[in-house]
Image 1: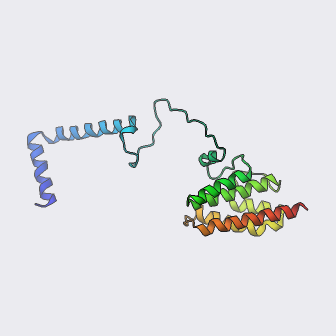
Image 2 (image 1 turned 135 degrees about the vertical axis):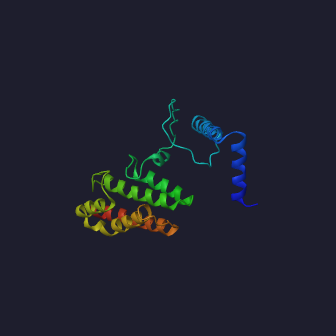
Length: 190
């Protein structure tokens, strides 16, 4: 028996016994009950299934504060620069790289480079700046920073905006560029 024939016979039996209108109401009511249960009691739903992310009508539980300052960065959006020293951002990038999360490691290394520029008073941080604008402002202040910043900006943009997969080589190159930037900043102080 083919599926279409089985379906036609099943619909015919349901229509004969219950009626199509009543059957449709039962299906809609069941769907409504499942939707309410899904929304109100997400513990019933396995974690792997997607859930609707609607605003909750009940009070939300407060999240406890994270003990490690570097872990707080994980909740910060991509375009913001957290108020942490650059070495904390580098530590977080190292953790991401150790976990194989190279895209996040590249992002944190780029944030560390920007924080280092801010700490050395090369630029003032403006969250609305693009990577290109940021590099341009730093190069206008110190032309020696051109090569590491433009290359780092290209790697960051390719991974985060160009959707290219991040690899260990990208993280290693960002480490080298960060070292070059630090050397250029120390040289510029003299």
